[in-house]
Image (cartoon, rainbow, N blue to C red; front, side, top):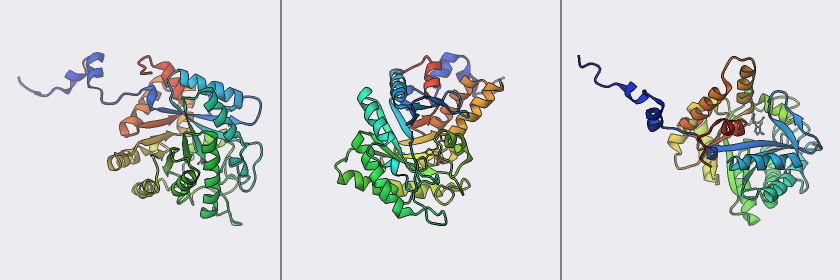
Length: 328
Ligand code: PBG
C-alpha cells in the first residue's frame, strides 16, 4: 500500500524536527513591557491584574532595570497623577509624573527604550481622552493642541517613543509637527492606530484610575464590528508620519493584525495584548483551569504569528523567566 504519499506527521515526530520546521518563535526582543508609575510613595497592587502594581518612581526605576536585565528592550509608561482636572494638565506639566519617570529611568537605564503613552484619560477629572464640551463630547482639535504640548514635554524629558493612544483625528500629524518644530526630529511615534472600543480595557482602568466618569469612548475608539475601517485609520497615520503602527487589543483582533500586516508589510506593527487579556488568563490559572505558562506562550505566539513585530504585554517578564531559550 502506497497511501498516503504525503505524511505531514513526519515533521512532527519529535521536538527536534518540530523545532527545525517551526515558523514562529518568540524572544525577549519582541516585547514591550507596560509600567504604571504613581506619584504616591508606596507600591499598590492592582486587584484585577495579579503581579502588576502601580509603582512609585524609585520602584519604577528598579522595575525598568530588572526588565532590561532579563532582556526586555523597551517599556511603555502610564502615569497616575497627583491631581486631575478638566484639561488633564498634569499630562503636559513639566514636573508631571511621567516627565519625572522618563528622566529618571533614562538616567538609570540609558539603553532601555522608553515609550510614553500620550493620552489624557488618566489625567482628566472626567476620565475622557481629551477636552470635552458641555455634552461630554470629545473636542478633537482642542485636544490636539494639548497633545502637542504633552508630546513635547515627554520628548524633552528624553522619551524615545511617543505613543498617542486617544484615537483623536490628526493626532499623529499634530505630534510630528510639534516634535519637528522643537527639533525632536528623531523621536519615534508609535501610533495606537486601530484601537477598538473594548471591554478588554476594564482592568487597565482600575490600574490607571482612568475609567470615564460618564458615557463611553465609542465616539473616538473604533467599533469592534469593523475590520476595513482599520485600513483607513492606518493609512492616515502612515501619511501623517507614524513610525510604528498598532492594533489594540490583540487576541480578539488577530484577523485585523493579519490583514494589516499583509497590507502594510513595510511598517513595524505592534499589537497590544491588553489588561483584560492578562486578567482572563490569570483568573483561569488561579482557578487551576488552565496551564498558565503554556497558555501564555500560545497566546503570545499567536499574536506574533498573526503578524506583530512588537508585542506589548504584561506577561513579558513572566514569559522570559519561564523560557530558557533566550536570545539576549
Ligand atoms: C489610554 C490607554 C488605555 C489603554 C492603553 N492606553 C485605556 C483606554 O483606552 O481606556 C488600555 C491598556 C490595557 O487595557 O491594558 N487611552
